[in-house]
Amino acid sequence: MVQHSVSRVTMDDIAPHLLRFLRDKVNSFVKWDLVRFFHDNPHAADTAENIARYTGRDVRTIADELKGLVEAGVLEQNEVSGLTIYSLASDETMRGLIREFVRACDDRQFRVKAIYHVIRGMR
Image (tube, rainbow, N blue to C red; front, side, top):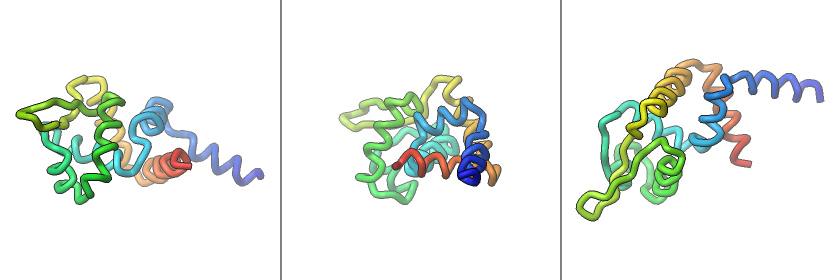
């Protein structure tokens, strides 16, 4: 029992705003991949089919996750010539949070903690 408590404390020492971002917005590994894709390609504006191809995922796998990121304010969705196009949110506060999250992911310890929270949230 003590070991579980110590483990949990260790996993919960992520900055509160990044933990909220992870739990509320990037709460799956697919969303994490999509956030990384749009961070690395901030001017990308494309269909789910093309984004699936670029990220190496099946379009059925990412379609709901893209919609979830739109609802969370991480991405924007627009209609262009009858096609649904996804792009990174234009809100600078959100972009700053995304940059901070991706930068934090460069740290192995942060990634381990983030993975723990994503898996824990999937239960």
